[in-house]
Image 1: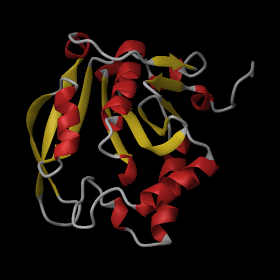
Image 2: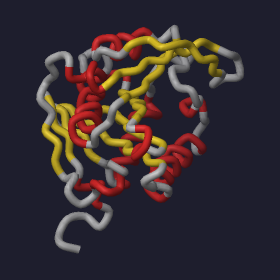
Image 3: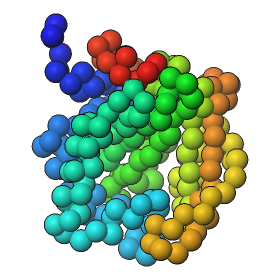
Image 4: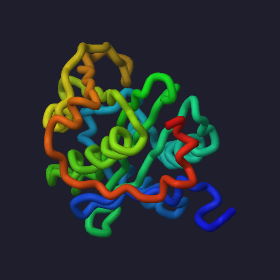
Length: 214
């Protein structure tokens, strides 16, 4: 190994507008778990396709850590999920994910994210998704980016619309056992490049480029 972390994804950094996104270590994962446990949404709401925030302690904590360990252990060119911690002016505030299935052929990514409730409503959600979209479109050669939001989650839908996604349909999902409508959004590479974006600094890809199937 010629320098850098043995798992080179730990060297990847995204920086924009006071945000830094990078892979958290185990101690930082523990802190993120605490932030998520303290609350991401109102108890009567469920913005996620899988109701992971409903789990009671200690299963919540165990599941949280195990999920993030599994995305690293099961990483492959055919299926990967890069789940980055988000720091705003040095403060850990949430997570932003970027993932793909068969990226080498589909050139399509998906995104998912969450923010601690005290950090919501400050424009961080839009900026952190912008950061991973810049990674996907400007550095990995993505052609499409997908996202989705339940019809009762206007904040997520507003981010998608503000970034230029187009609504392409509705899916039925049932995270708590009752079907709900989730609007699906799609952003093309042309759509991404059609408008001015805040600059995003991306570093640390040199040793892990091949891991994405880029």
